[in-house]
Amino acid sequence: MKISNCEFPDGLLYDVELGTWADLKGDVIRVGITSLLSWSFGVFSAITFRSIGTTLVRGQVMGTMEGSRHFDVFRSPVAGTLSAVNERLTEEPGLLNKDPYGEAWFAEIRVKDNDELGALGRLPQAEHRIAELLKERRVHCFAAYPDFEIFDTGVECQAVLAKLNELLERSTPGTVVHLVSDDSSAEIEMQRWSDQTGNSVLDVQKEGRIFHYIVRKEPSKAGEV
Image 1 (spheres, rainbow, N blue to C red):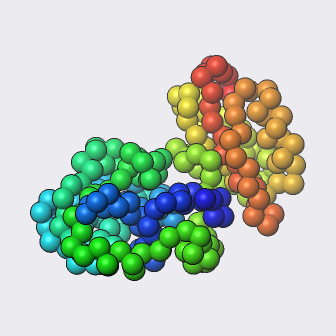
Image 2: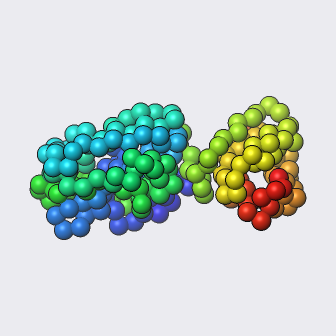
């Protein structure tokens, strides 16, 4: 299910306030962060975990997460024992931005009391509160997580595109950029830019007078921007 353009898969349990999801497999749950956190932290740069075997109560810290915008802790949504952690995240913390519900799972917990899972919500019942939090925290989710961001308002789109071209000239194919403009001609200019360069516009969202574009440098035009 998408809520305000943010992905929240059906079939999972959610601790909406903590921004975590849980997937029950027998007496073990796999847990991770939701789109609410993955899109609000900025680029993740460091992850730490408590030791496997740590006894947890609901709300207890089981690890830390550091991003370009925030530093926070990961709190357990249930009581139990920490049985596994995703060590890959210590080497590739950016996975939390790109695949929070898949490869970037955070940890596994052997649940002490399955009745405690009743405190977690399911979709669509949790949808309204999730939507409220996304709005309160001004979280924007896009089709792909950007490697770079260009925020330029009050200038013509052509000037913004000049900066984009300079950035892509020194970037590898597959690089994703979040570009923001308030120029009323942005829609026409971005389409023209994509046609001329062969690079892709993956997503377009409008917020009042502000345009958000997610663009990707394509391999077929690696030498052209």
